[in-house]
Length: 273
Image 1 (cartoon, rainbow, N blue to C red):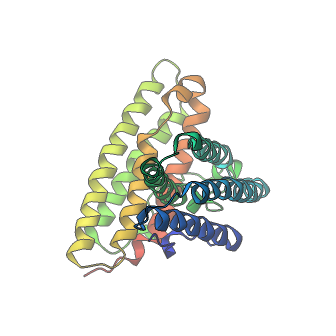
Image 2 (image 1 turned 120 degrees about the horizontal axis):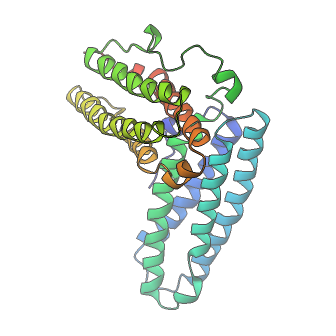
């Protein structure tokens, strides 16, 4: 069974309650997929898919309305991710599951997609709802990429590596501020590759430390780390080609915002032993 854990909570009651129900639908599919049964599940599978699509549409509309009200800078990206989810659900072709084996395969595929998408979407995107200041307010800060004392965890290794992550993001931010069409594009992409490499390195060190002290929050941390790395791995280079400054600005806002929120709400809970 898949658990809706505390690390998945956004702190927004309605959104969290709706996320819990999406997990209930995931577990309904999981139970159907793992129950030893040789009967025809065509109708039950069809009902799950219908409810998933309907409930997701209802939930996404609430989430997007809330983000619009608070002028959340991630709204456009969220709309794209929501549309992708609904498209994937509609791709499950009921016409090809006349026999039980095909039904079981579709259920397995559905559970795999739902579990991966829900955890990653919530932990990389939804968790940031309301955490990022509206764009114009964010950019008024003198240097949003500066590492300050409030981010210290007290764990020397972790703090030093966090400083390096801030330094790399700030390097990309400085390139963006003085954007030059001829040279900045390639430089920023190189910096983002550097950030991805160092992030993977840092998360490995952090997880190794948590494992060494038998920290009970390790599993939740791993899920959050995987979601962030996936974000870095799925940078839309075609979109950068079309709107380099706009896309990169939004990306950097997300990266620094996610890092700040993750440190303050999650990493600072790691014991210093």
